[in-house]
Image: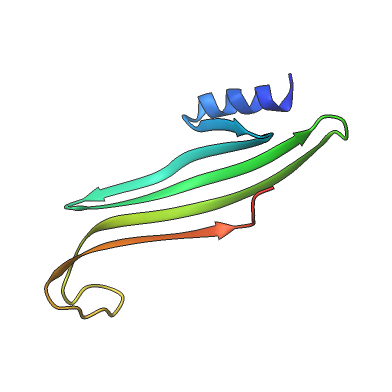
Amino acid sequence: MSVTEDSKALADGVSAELKEKKGVWTLKAVIAERKAFLSKKKLEYIAKFRVDDGAQTIRFSEMLKESGSGVSSGGGFDGDMSPGFGFKKETYKTGASPP
């Protein structure tokens, strides 16, 4: 079996999405998701890799991406003291740059 065939089998086994674009494979899987009243948060694992069969090497990077959106209320968390209600969307990533 090749690395790409093994990756496809792994993606099917963990309900992940596997795509290829210009020789770079991307594997995405939702690790955790929380839904509450008018808000939603999601933690996603993303791995990107390029296979070089001639040199028998794999260039690989991975990251965790957390995103959330929803309605915030006045006097909320993290020290923000905004009056009334509002809409809040946030995203941040950790990891190295893609191959």
